Length: 89
Image (cartoon, rainbow, N blue to C red):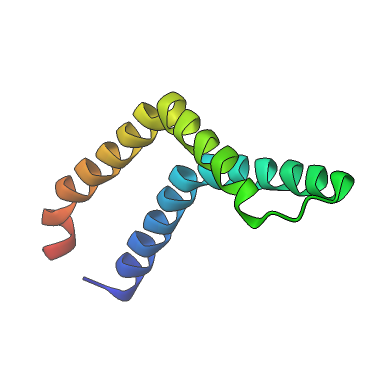
């Protein structure tokens, strides 16, 4: 294994992780921003108010995009297993 192959694997791993987690993070960020704007407009300063909408949003995103995320992870894992002989030899 050369340093270049390790760097390539690390870059691919980070890229797959970003693609898998991005939908969850972006929707959670958007919901948090909307709830924060609502709190600022109504002067409600309850810290637990953001928890339920974010949790519901994450569950909905996982229900919608979960199969695609899982397939992306499976494909990446299968590619890594297939490339073991090339990486070793």
